[in-house]
Amino acid sequence: MKVRYLLIITLITLLLASCGSDTRANREASESPQKKIVLKIAQNSSVNHPYQSGLEKFKEVIEKETDGNVEVNIFPNGQLGNEEQEILGVKLGVIDATIISSGSLAPFVLNIEIFNLPYLFRDQEHFYRVLDGPIGVWMGKIIEARINCIFLGYSSFGIRNAWNSKKPVRIPDDFKGMKIRVTDSPILLSTFNAFGAQATNMDWNELYSALQQGVLDGGECDVVDLLVEKFYEVTKYVSFTNHFIGTAVFIFSKKKYDRYPPYVQTAILKAGRAGVMAARRTQDEFAQHALEELKKKGLEFFPVDKDLFIDKVQSVYQKYADKVGGQKLIDQIIRQ
Image (cartoon, rainbow, N blue to C red; front, side, top):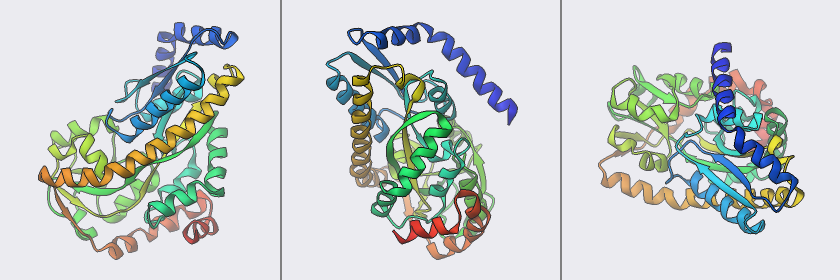
């Protein structure tokens, strides 16, 4: 683990050196609102992903609110590193902002793992009711403290399903012997191990080639990701496990935020909210279209016996409940 983080810090240091001139320019810009401020914002998915729609809305709003004194450059497809590196970039003030998954955030903010518990949320409406309420606000403050960032809001990366290239999965036993990629969340890794799969963590941008080469048998994501990341080219069978709803978090570097004049800070908060809502709308609108397109492309979809999957993950709740806030908090979320 220490070696891993040393490598990440080294990468961030190199990026910081390469961006030195941009950092100086932003510092000068903060001293004079007449000079243009250039924001660097990263996201790890393709330009067709709802994340990108959210960031483009952020760009539109902040550039308008500041009369063009702020310019936003968006770097999709992991151009500035994987999600872990993007989080560290925000923490260290190397990049201004990013939208990242709760799974990637979990090693930095253990509490957010509560949102990764399988079958915690009944549906998307329940999901947003919790995240927009007191529990979501409480979590946002923890994220700010741990990452040294400004929390701008939550969106979603969809209702997640499992898929593979080997055979249909209808019951947990069908997963036996399959290597399934999940995000870097201890709870999600434990969930798929509980299902009976060999849960494996791998960088999102390496997943396609790993599937293509047969290193992995499958993965888990929502139908939007299946379409925009073209995983339909390297998989066949999709099971409606609906095991969790992905929480995405939009964060802005506090180191950068504190350098900017008040009118820019106000614009960041307004644009952040607009960006989050745009990402949500795009995700919701795109999901049904993506499902229809994937069927046309030959993917096969299968219902599952969800009760069997829920039974399998009771061990995950027993293992992690106390670590992520306790059973009382879990019950509070379920009741909302």
